[in-house]
Image (tube, rainbow, N blue to C red; front, side, top):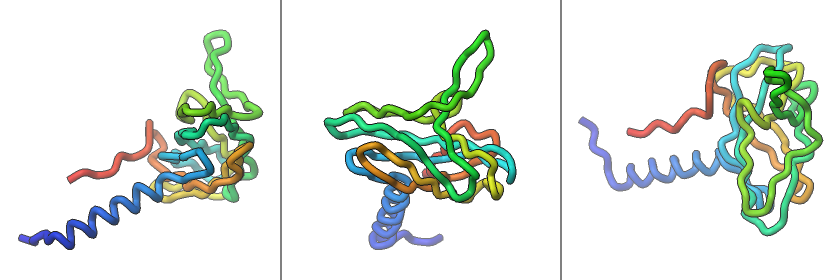
Length: 157
Protein backbone atom coordinates (compact mmCIF):
# COMPACT_ATOMS: atom_id res chain seq x y z
CA UNK A 1 0.00 0.00 0.00
CA UNK A 2 1.41 3.41 -0.93
CA UNK A 3 2.18 5.86 1.83
CA UNK A 4 1.23 9.49 1.39
CA UNK A 5 3.87 11.75 2.86
CA UNK A 6 3.37 15.27 4.11
CA UNK A 7 5.32 16.56 1.13
CA UNK A 8 3.12 14.51 -1.24
CA UNK A 9 -0.04 15.80 0.45
CA UNK A 10 1.22 19.37 0.17
CA UNK A 11 1.98 18.81 -3.54
CA UNK A 12 -1.52 17.46 -4.15
CA UNK A 13 -3.08 20.43 -2.34
CA UNK A 14 -1.01 22.90 -4.34
CA UNK A 15 -1.93 21.15 -7.60
CA UNK A 16 -5.64 21.18 -6.68
CA UNK A 17 -5.37 24.86 -5.79
CA UNK A 18 -3.76 25.57 -9.17
CA UNK A 19 -6.56 23.74 -10.97
CA UNK A 20 -9.20 25.73 -9.08
CA UNK A 21 -7.35 28.95 -9.88
CA UNK A 22 -7.16 27.99 -13.56
CA UNK A 23 -10.93 27.56 -13.67
CA UNK A 24 -11.50 31.12 -12.40
CA UNK A 25 -10.32 34.22 -14.24
CA UNK A 26 -10.10 37.77 -12.95
CA UNK A 27 -10.91 40.84 -15.08
CA UNK A 28 -10.76 44.01 -12.99
CA UNK A 29 -13.42 43.62 -10.29
CA UNK A 30 -15.00 40.72 -12.15
CA UNK A 31 -14.32 37.08 -11.33
CA UNK A 32 -15.38 34.58 -14.00
CA UNK A 33 -15.95 31.11 -12.59
CA UNK A 34 -16.88 27.65 -13.85
CA UNK A 35 -16.87 28.22 -17.63
CA UNK A 36 -18.23 25.17 -19.46
CA UNK A 37 -19.98 23.97 -22.57
CA UNK A 38 -21.65 20.85 -23.92
CA UNK A 39 -20.22 18.63 -26.63
CA UNK A 40 -21.42 19.59 -30.14
CA UNK A 41 -20.52 18.70 -33.71
CA UNK A 42 -18.71 20.84 -36.27
CA UNK A 43 -21.08 23.04 -38.26
CA UNK A 44 -23.56 22.99 -35.40
CA UNK A 45 -24.29 25.53 -32.67
CA UNK A 46 -22.66 25.36 -29.25
CA UNK A 47 -23.31 27.21 -26.02
CA UNK A 48 -21.14 28.65 -23.27
CA UNK A 49 -22.05 28.93 -19.61
CA UNK A 50 -20.28 30.58 -16.67
CA UNK A 51 -20.71 32.69 -13.55
CA UNK A 52 -19.61 36.33 -13.29
CA UNK A 53 -19.08 37.84 -9.81
CA UNK A 54 -18.72 41.62 -9.60
CA UNK A 55 -16.81 42.33 -6.38
CA UNK A 56 -16.46 46.03 -7.17
CA UNK A 57 -18.52 49.13 -6.47
CA UNK A 58 -19.23 49.90 -10.12
CA UNK A 59 -21.55 48.00 -12.48
CA UNK A 60 -20.15 46.44 -15.62
CA UNK A 61 -21.60 44.85 -18.74
CA UNK A 62 -20.63 41.92 -20.91
CA UNK A 63 -20.92 43.54 -24.35
CA UNK A 64 -19.59 40.80 -26.65
CA UNK A 65 -17.60 37.60 -26.95
CA UNK A 66 -15.58 35.85 -29.64
CA UNK A 67 -14.05 32.43 -30.21
CA UNK A 68 -11.86 31.14 -33.02
CA UNK A 69 -13.81 27.87 -33.05
CA UNK A 70 -17.06 29.62 -34.11
CA UNK A 71 -18.07 31.90 -36.97
CA UNK A 72 -19.63 34.22 -34.37
CA UNK A 73 -20.49 34.33 -30.68
CA UNK A 74 -23.72 36.01 -29.58
CA UNK A 75 -25.09 36.86 -26.15
CA UNK A 76 -28.48 35.16 -25.76
CA UNK A 77 -31.36 34.63 -23.37
CA UNK A 78 -34.35 32.29 -23.26
CA UNK A 79 -37.85 33.77 -23.34
CA UNK A 80 -41.27 32.16 -22.95
CA UNK A 81 -43.53 33.25 -25.83
CA UNK A 82 -46.99 31.72 -26.13
CA UNK A 83 -45.97 28.72 -24.05
CA UNK A 84 -42.87 28.10 -26.18
CA UNK A 85 -39.29 28.62 -25.01
CA UNK A 86 -37.31 30.66 -27.56
CA UNK A 87 -33.75 31.96 -27.64
CA UNK A 88 -33.13 35.60 -28.48
CA UNK A 89 -29.96 37.67 -28.80
CA UNK A 90 -29.40 40.44 -26.26
CA UNK A 91 -27.17 43.49 -26.83
CA UNK A 92 -25.36 43.12 -23.48
CA UNK A 93 -25.54 41.37 -20.11
CA UNK A 94 -25.56 43.65 -17.08
CA UNK A 95 -23.33 42.72 -14.13
CA UNK A 96 -24.45 44.95 -11.22
CA UNK A 97 -21.93 46.00 -8.56
CA UNK A 98 -21.65 43.48 -5.73
CA UNK A 99 -23.80 40.90 -7.51
CA UNK A 100 -23.41 37.61 -9.34
CA UNK A 101 -24.80 36.79 -12.79
CA UNK A 102 -25.01 33.19 -13.95
CA UNK A 103 -25.09 32.21 -17.61
CA UNK A 104 -26.62 28.75 -17.72
CA UNK A 105 -28.99 26.42 -19.56
CA UNK A 106 -32.49 27.90 -19.85
CA UNK A 107 -31.31 31.47 -19.22
CA UNK A 108 -28.59 33.85 -20.32
CA UNK A 109 -25.80 32.14 -22.28
CA UNK A 110 -23.22 32.47 -25.04
CA UNK A 111 -24.21 31.05 -28.45
CA UNK A 112 -21.28 29.73 -30.51
CA UNK A 113 -22.61 29.85 -34.07
CA UNK A 114 -21.42 27.57 -36.89
CA UNK A 115 -18.71 25.67 -35.06
CA UNK A 116 -15.58 25.28 -37.20
CA UNK A 117 -14.58 22.15 -35.26
CA UNK A 118 -16.41 19.86 -32.85
CA UNK A 119 -16.61 20.59 -29.14
CA UNK A 120 -15.31 17.29 -27.76
CA UNK A 121 -15.95 16.18 -24.19
CA UNK A 122 -12.81 16.58 -22.09
CA UNK A 123 -11.39 19.46 -24.14
CA UNK A 124 -11.27 23.15 -23.20
CA UNK A 125 -12.26 25.81 -25.72
CA UNK A 126 -10.91 29.40 -25.47
CA UNK A 127 -13.48 32.21 -25.59
CA UNK A 128 -12.74 35.91 -25.16
CA UNK A 129 -15.29 37.89 -23.15
CA UNK A 130 -15.44 41.67 -23.69
CA UNK A 131 -16.65 43.83 -20.81
CA UNK A 132 -17.48 47.53 -20.96
CA UNK A 133 -15.27 48.46 -17.97
CA UNK A 134 -13.07 45.44 -17.22
CA UNK A 135 -11.98 44.93 -20.84
CA UNK A 136 -11.16 41.57 -22.36
CA UNK A 137 -10.60 38.28 -20.57
CA UNK A 138 -10.02 34.85 -22.09
CA UNK A 139 -11.73 31.90 -20.44
CA UNK A 140 -11.61 28.23 -21.36
CA UNK A 141 -14.94 26.45 -21.60
CA UNK A 142 -14.55 22.93 -20.18
CA UNK A 143 -16.51 20.73 -22.60
CA UNK A 144 -18.86 18.30 -20.85
CA UNK A 145 -21.07 15.58 -22.32
CA UNK A 146 -23.82 16.60 -24.76
CA UNK A 147 -26.49 16.18 -22.06
CA UNK A 148 -24.62 17.81 -19.17
CA UNK A 149 -26.61 20.02 -16.82
CA UNK A 150 -23.61 21.81 -15.37
CA UNK A 151 -19.84 21.78 -15.08
CA UNK A 152 -18.27 18.57 -13.85
CA UNK A 153 -17.59 18.65 -10.14
CA UNK A 154 -14.01 18.00 -9.06
CA UNK A 155 -13.45 14.44 -7.86
CA UNK A 156 -13.15 14.10 -4.09
CA UNK A 157 -11.44 11.12 -2.51
